[in-house]
Length: 153
Image (cartoon, rainbow, N blue to C red; front, side):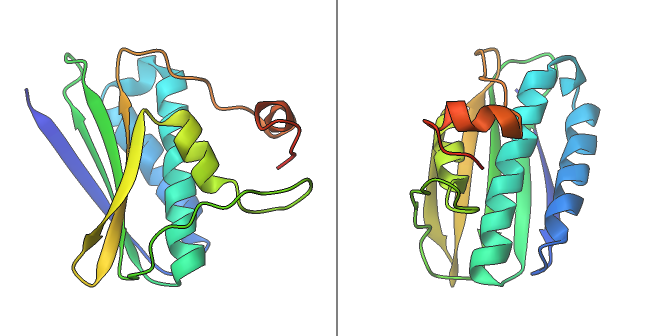
């Protein structure tokens, strides 16, 4: 099976999150995933959350990587975000109207697997989705209150 890896360097600026989403959408379309809109949108949401965490919580540049097989093969799509901060990711639990603290909860709920590992002086946070397995569709902001047990984001 052939695996394609693409990567994007992300600066330590919150505006980079939007650029990472646009880049990911174009790479996913080019990989043949345009026929599975639910999978593509879930991956873009996961990328958005991981890049946001890297940029906002570390203030460091990061590298976004996507690894996936050819369009003909099922398999796993892996997203990695590496940064130069040695601080481990810290899942938080948001309450009520909190505007943050749900990123890793979303990653945990949408990805088949996720984790992190030290890498050089920093770390790499990763998540995986198995292709061919039904993926829960990302919820819109109005629906997120129901998906997260009444908490609105």
